[in-house]
Image (tube, rainbow, N blue to C red; front, side):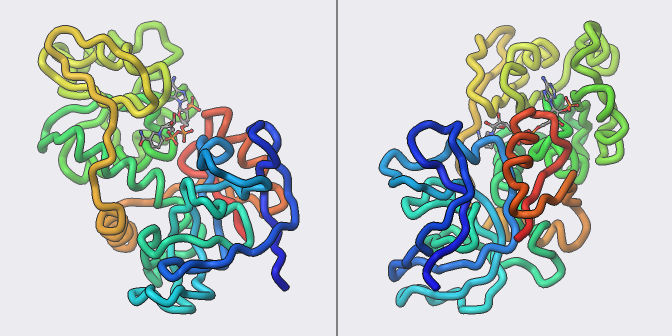
Length: 306
Ligand SMILES: NC(=O)c1ccc[n+]([C@@H]2O[C@H](COP(=O)([O-])OP(=O)(O)OC[C@H]3O[C@@H](n4cnc5c(N)ncnc54)[C@H](OP(=O)(O)O)[C@@H]3O)[C@@H](O)[C@H]2O)c1
């Protein structure tokens, strides 16, 4: 048995993703082979493939599973270990598959108290949320506007900020106002309300200390609600002209992934941070999950279970 089911890109055309039988990848000495149990779904899934990808190429960048084989030089993980994984840009393919080969640098032990679906949500949104908090560098009682606060990253950022005593005002549509409050946002606005910036200013007349612009196209509007000399961190490549001494930066990847993720896992285990999963899809319906994430209206995370 050396074949597996995988959702693959068949060509450079990212629109074409299909379920196919493909070879189970072999592993190098620094890699492990993981039997995938759950997949975290996100906007990058069909796009993030290496330039050298051979087709058919299994898509997918984050998941959780059990190690079934280890390379000769892997010494901190063993067969049978439950792990969470990043398979972003792996030459041998991603984790929308029954098995995935990844470097032992790209996995973290999954705590016994967490199940695979929870584990699968952590690697991308979790790391990005931690890096965002690091880049924002705020202190207790500072104020933070989050554009896209009900999504995968925002759901974690609200909680991480609240835990540090940072006061959050979150932006999403009307259906997510109570949701953002339940996570710890002190105030919320609906981006469809033409007066939402005024509402932020009613809350903080000078403007907030900082903004995190998660959703594409939210950078400039976020800057408008930041006080003079504050900062904006953008996550989706928005080009924003700085003004009023507000610093604008795109998020840079600075944290050691394994250490940061292990710390976040501990916060989830101890219930300091909750993982919110809108829906778990069976593997055969994974393309529905992809379509849903691409609407940019998922709440928390979407997960595929195998
Ligand atoms: N730089 C990095 O390292 C990095 C890493 C990962 C991701 N990203 C970027 O982050 C983005 C994805 O973030 P995510 O996974 O958290 O997104 P997500 O889960 O898809 O976010 C969906 C949420 O965003 C809300 N939303 C949609 N449009 C909005 C708007 N105009 N203003 C405010 N809220 C809005 C939706 O609420 P409603 O349904 O209520 O509208 C929904 O709950 C992508 O663009 C990706 O490229 C960057």
